[in-house]
Length: 354
Ligand SMILES: [Mg+2]
Image (cartoon, rainbow, N blue to C red; front, side):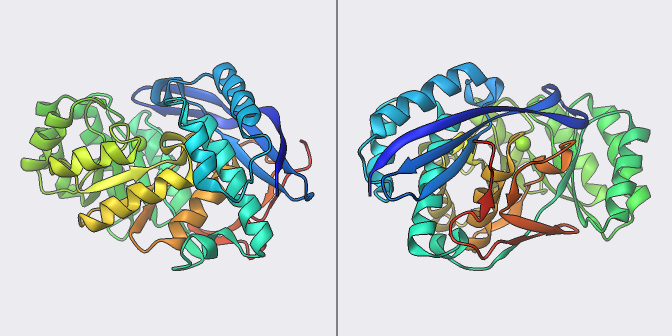
């Protein structure tokens, strides 16, 4: 089988309401959908969700790089995923562009094998329990959002904080009062705190029953993460600090985190994600699989990865729940907080607009 070309489509999805985190506000989901075509008529779908802040890619640079990778991969066998990643990795970074192609290659692999991706990747299970994220806002707004989600059967809330510690404590106090003790609450500060704030604040927040705290300080501050971890009991998760397997090794060598948040857009796809998960598992660290503001196509790949691997014990795969409309069909179904993966070969997604 040979790759004959890569088609690219830019998609801008309006969100039902602005999504706010400590680092900024999003009104749209900017995605690039790719279709890797082959000489056997089998094609693979993938998607990029570039984030200038996290991956250093804009929509425009990402589209250029997908085109470039498409040219480099023309004539290659799409089933040779290690070779294709080797070719793409001759260029550094550009991880969401790489992820889009890598996901499409895995879709082709699944279609060729006649197996759903979660089976090919490991097959530990076919469901994923995901949280739904509450964006940071006035406490009263966040309480209303939390109540609506719990009324829909959501049992895990990921709450965005990082905009002033006293306000954050107020936010979590009120949300916990509103949802009761049976709902899991995990926090994500998106680099919004200092080391001192984080240590003091997390120790005050733990009375509200916090499952974990994600990325309290700046991405580069590994020593800060280590210091925080040494001074709190709530499990600490790294997100913006870890992109690649090499980052994972460094954080683990420093014993600076408890949980690693893998996102396909940061790792460059499923191939590197598997390495990160193996490193984490061997070091006794649990993994979360998270998402950017990204497409159902890449969420389906992330959900398959999460279901396939026993060590992926947390999932934050919810960006599609914010779209005003969605024209991607399949991949998974949602039943309250549970994602049930498609049994169709590959990703099991259909998208006719490319
Ligand atoms: Mg995060």
